[in-house]
Length: 427
Length: 181
Ligand SMILES: Cc1ncc(COP(=O)(O)O)c(C=O)c1O
Picture 1 (spheres, rainbow over the protein chains, first blue to last red):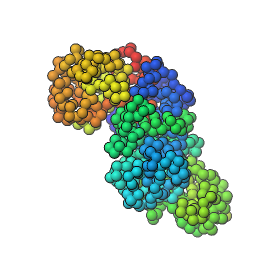
Picture 2 (spheres, chains in turn purple, green):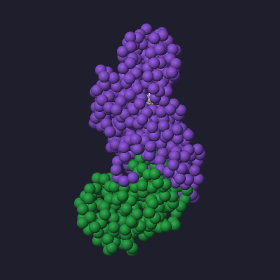
Picture 3 (cartoon, chains in turn brown, green):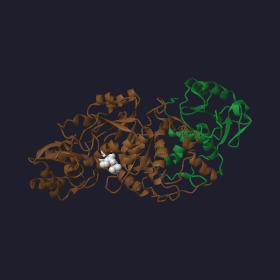
Picture 4 (cartoon, each protein chain N blue to C red):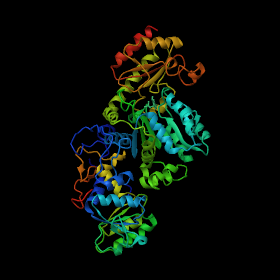
């Protein structure tokens, strides 16, 4: 194209995906191969030494996956991206590139429960500590940072609480302290919110959710904002020090503003191994082509469902930032003005038993533990994902006995509301 | 001209126009960025001449090293500078004394010297600063996308293949037709 800057929907379809050079195939082919032949020994040496761009082995790069990576980088406004097997794998590789044993992450407490578990328990065995802060209070992040803090972690739109995080306020603290801000943008997607534009340095996603959008493929991605100076403090030796794995190469100096994505690939993905399959990359890539249409519809329908529930006499409360009067509505208007996303929670009168009855009564909604499908999804956390917790722990985690979470799908909204109506009437 | 950003057409035009590139500050150390760029540009068919007084008379990647631009015994199309912004000024002045003058002066990532750029442009020499020709070639050919890098290039045209399994080129850019790369 000319030097015109393409719009979001154009990028969602075209970024990273020229026709296939050898066949002319217009849709990015599924390169379902583990390995790629070299031209000769010198070409192989250049590839292994990171001196040439190209493919060696699908654990490290794959052309189908590369199209997905470039597309997400373009949509988020980053310099580069790395796609991996799941959202959790993306988080693991990000922190692997940033932390050494004894270092810590300052994380907002409004996160997906799986991320809380990952940080509290699995990361401990790497010697990484997590210091929890109040996600809705930016100043609390500044208070928790110490000399071993190497990253700040938040969700832009938190799952499931409906909290919209004040990214700019937290980014200002991160910049002031010379620490990268990592934002999980899974629930918003870059259609609704682009954290790098608000000061985030690294963005991660569970591609499993809205990016893929059809509930058929696991995937995760790391986007490098290209904004952080990895060499300034000496605290990020993976990037700023000569790497023995690559004969003393210094990644930041060699790869400049996309060095973080390279570090996650050639030190993290290469050695820890959570590669995405080319088939999943293909399905997610196809899903992303309709991301703008889907996210707008998800958000518009979720707002209508939230309005319906707010007026229902069996509903105690509704938490959805897209709803006028919601405590996070003004932050939603600032950070994601096109909509509040698909996910909302509400309290059903009658507590635990009413929650169980509701998820049993639905006929269109699927009762399962996921979000970001074309299908409408419902879950009662207290009886499923959070059932092992005490009542106090459940309430603290936003999974009290009455809480029900919806991921509003793309069906006709009248049908979604009718299903909830009949299910509630029988509670 | 404004050197904060360049159009793709400007960069593509330069990579298309030049064939002989003198690289000032080329390193013989195989993990230094300058060595990477030298190797890549050679593979793409450019004639790259390393300039490094400490290595003068030796070879890097089979190319004879010269101590200074003035020692190079053939016309130079582009001078690629791998030295600090400060040092770049004197190198640009040396480049402008060459006969014939180079068509382009290119300063690598993080290197910028606006005064020197103005002197070169006053003599009709094109200038690029704070960019890497390897990254720009990889970006415009689509090769860099294999590394997940945002090339900022959208196209419904089939990319140009060059010799070898995994080598793309720039349409219309073929400094030494038939060479590998
Ligand atoms: C906000 C958020 N981040 C991360 C994850 C983890 O992603 P994955 O299940 O792809 O590992 C999830 C999954 O539910 C999520 O909702």
